[in-house]
Length: 190
Image (tube, rainbow, N blue to C red):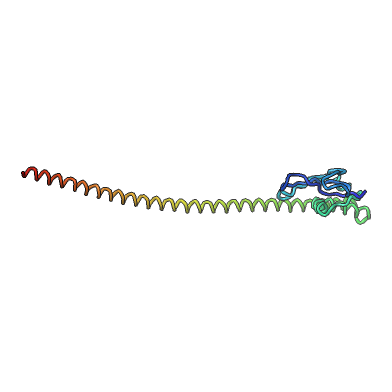
């Protein structure tokens, strides 16, 4: 029975996440499996991988063949490197302490790179948010200037209209007074 380490798709349409499983290669993708050894979520940044390191290493040593994607996942988690180092110990190339030292050095470097990536993405998000706020502030300032300009024009127009109304109020009143004065003058003359 050829055994594979592969992904089994879960989640809804457009929002996948995967179980990392050990299964018979003849079984369907989402069907029967021998053992679940981890979870992979590609939607997060960086991708979330939860893997039972010892089980994965054990299955690899027993001869399970990972698919291409699982090989990449196992490599990124260090399982493939650990398997390689343990084979070097078996062959006598170096001792177990040297293998463990090399693996720990790799792991520290990997964690440092991961932290750099997270901090870089966080800085990029903060920079983007700052730029967005600056752009919004500029737009808000332009709008405030436009509103102030419109209000000034409106106030000018209202004051001009008020002055015009005051001038027009006096002239009709003067016209109204003059005929009545003429009427009074005519009636007194008679």
